Structure formats: C-alpha cells, structure tokens
Amino acid sequence: MYIGHFAPAFVARAVTDESPGLSTLFIAAQLIDWAFFTFAIFGIEKMRMVPGITAMNPLDLYHMPLTHSLLGTAVFALGFGGIVYFVSRNMVAGCWAAIVVAAHWILDLLVHRPDLTIAGSEPKFGFGLWNRPEIAMPLELGIILIAFWWYMRRTKGPIVPPIILLATMVLFQAINWFGPPPEEATLGFYLTALASFAILTALAYWLDETRWHKSTVGLAVASARR
Image (cartoon, rainbow, N blue to C red):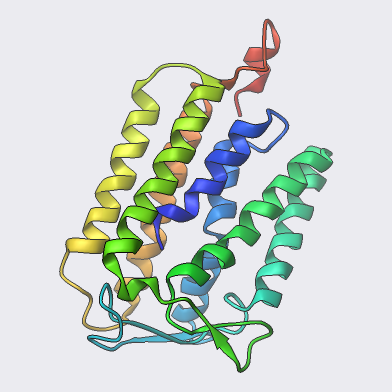
C-alpha cells in the first residue's frame, strides 16, 4: 500500500483541529516506511526483487523486524506521538500522531504477503491482497478518496492546493502500479521512495498554509495555519 497510508492522516486532520498539521500527519503516515528505506540503505533491514512473488509487485520484504513488526510499529508510534506532544504540549495531538503511525501496520496487513511479524520473528502475517489487484486497487483508491473527501468537508480554504496534492498522489500511485517494475533493490530505488514521501509531505505543508479546520473561526484562523 502506498497512498492509502495517507488516509489516516486526512481522517485525523478532519476529526479535530487539535490534531497536528497535515504535513506532520503525512510524516506519521509513512514514518514506518521512512525508517524502513533508510535502514535498507545501511543494510539494517533488507528486501529484494523477486519477479512474480505477488501479482502487483516484486517486493520480497524478507527482513524488516524493526519497522514492520507490530511491536516495532508501536515503538515508533509512541515515540513520534511523544515528540508531537512534547513540541505542542497537546495530548490530543500526540495521540492522533501515534494513531496515524500505528495505522500503517494495519493497512500493510491487508495487502502484504505474509512478511509482517508481531515482534520481529516467526510467525509472519499478511492477507495478501497484492495478489488480488481487482480488490487491492479499488480498496486503496477508495480509502484515500473517502478520507480526502471528509478532510475537504471539514476544512476551509482555496481548492487548488488540495487538488494539486491529490493529483500528485494519484500520479505517484499510477507510476507505482503501472510503471516498469524495479529489477533490483538499489540505492536509487530507496532514494526514489524517500523522495516521493518528501514531495507529498512538502505539498501537505503547503496545503497546511492555505486551509484551516471549520471549527477554527475568527482571529484564530491566522494562528491555525501550521
């Protein structure tokens, strides 16, 4: 799953103005993969390309005990939530940040082949929807579009920035689905993945500067943009 991971970020921002800004929530949504690809660069976690391993991609994610175990995800969630709380002094913001990080493992569980663990070792789990593109593709598009729609309903501001963000997300997803599959897990592949996260986060930051939650009114609007 790729852009589907950002759905909890939109939901968290839609629920309450006390949640972190959308750019912070975008970091939270892909924090696990930020860490995985960074660790992969240094050989701490590992993957390889095995053509045909799933119907939708050749990713063999055979060693990722720190990031994609349920325990590891929980540690990242608590750590990131703690940082957000420390910076904002807002427990609600910290909790939503942690929830968005934790949602990553649940969403991966739907699509991954059995390569997710509870604490870094066997058994491994995954419902394998990457082998059912007729289900996985509408599911991913559906959850992001519903979450985006709810975010738009709950916020105010110009329409152009969110449309640009959504269009970029759909473009990146189309490249992920229909572009040439990677042949090797190289440094270039890892950096491309990290760059795509950075671009979407930068667009989310821009969007933060142009939209505000409908619960924010009057003079509070100016201070709500972050």
